[in-house]
View 1 (cartoon, rainbow, N blue to C red):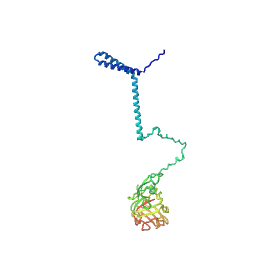
View 2: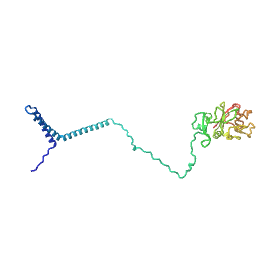
View 3: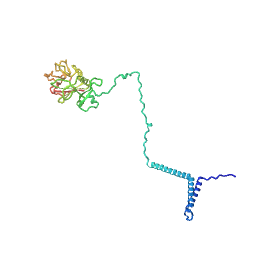
View 4: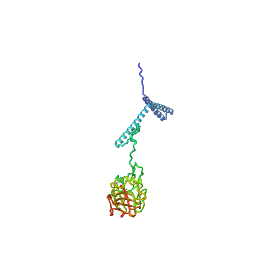
Length: 331
C-alpha cells in the first residue's frame, strides 16, 4: 500500500485552530451564562478557546504580514505614480525655462604663452632708433593744421622735435590773422632795451631766448607777420626773407643786439650794406642806437626794391611814424 502524505497549508491549519478557538470561546461564554452549571467548566472552555485562537493566529501570521506588506507596497506605488503624474502635468501645463550653466570642463582655457626664439644675431633694424610720435607739435602752424587749435592763446610746442635737445616751451599762437598758425617770438616797444624772457607774451615786452628763436626760425615756411599796437598787419614772405643780400633771417643767432651796434634781424640794400643811402629795407629790433632818426625800438623800413608783401602804412617807406610797438610772428 502506498502512503500518500497529506500536506495541509499553514493557512488551513491556522484557520481550523482559529475556528475551534472561537467555538470554544463562544461555548465558554454560554456556559458561564447558565445559572445551573458551575463556573469552572466555563472558564476552562474560555481558556481553551483563547489558546486555540492564539495558535490559529500564529499559523496565520505569515499570511497576514504578507498581505499587509503587499497592501503597503501597493499604496506606496500608487502614491509614487500619482506624484509622477502630477509633475508631468505641471511640466506640460507651464514649461519652466531653464538656464544651463556651463560646466567648468567646457570652458576653454587660454593657450599657454609662447616664448619667442632668441635670435642668434642682432637684427640691423634694432640698431636704429624707434620712431615715436612727438608729445608736442613743432609750431602753431602744425597745431592749427592738425585741428588741435582752440583759438588765439598759449600753447606748448617742441620746436626742434624729438631729435633735438631743446625742451618743449610755451608760446603765444595767433590762430585768426592771415590764415592763423602764427608763433609770437618777440614783443618790443620803442625806447627800451631788448631782453630775453622765458615766455613771450602779448602783455609784457620781451624776446625769445636764442635756442628757442633759432628753432622757431628754422621751422618757418610761410613768412613773418608784424602787428602794431593799432592792429595794422605787415607781412613778408619766406621767399623774400631769404633773398636779402646783407642779412637773411637765418643770420642772427640771437635777438639781443650786439653792444654798441644796431640790430637788424633782416637787412637788404640795393647797393652795398652800409646803410648810407635811402636804398635799404629792414626789420628793426633795436635799443636806442637810432634815437635821433626815430628808428629806435620796433619799426619796419622798405626803401629798397625788395619790399614787404603787405604794407598797411600811409608812409610808404617806414612804419616808425605811425607806430611804437610791434608783435613779431613767424609761420
